[in-house]
Image 1 (cartoon, rainbow, N blue to C red):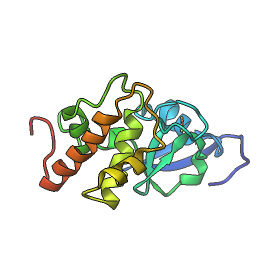
Image 2: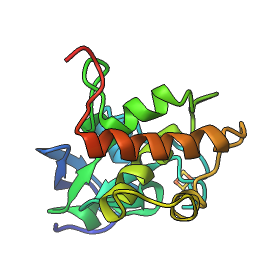
Image 3: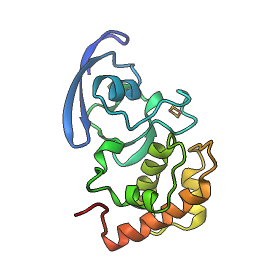
Length: 169
Ligand code: FES
């Protein structure tokens, strides 16, 4: 990365397995670059303060809040958004689990819940309820679907353990 913060520079971001080049200020929030420059609308804008989790992405497999990460700070790191997990035809096991558990109401928090669950299962393939609660405790859901979301985490662990992917395939 080079250039003065606040002015557009050329950034090379590794997103969902592809190298993407964008012109943006290096201090622009990663969330803004993903949504506005790359058209990746999985991560949502909630609080903009790193507190709600709606904007979660994975950076090198770790859940991170893209609203408070400068885009220039993650060049060369592997960024995964919701779009990088699976598709409608072939959902990722965690996405399938959230469908199976009917864990959505308004759906605004689900991006963060799903990506935090992916990161959790990478650390703990069969998480206890306490580990799941802890991993998701800073992802806010205003609809109150926490019970279904915790069921989805356990379902995701089952699906991942059995190698099952969703969809027709
Ligand atoms: Fe990033 Fe709330 S929008 S944590």
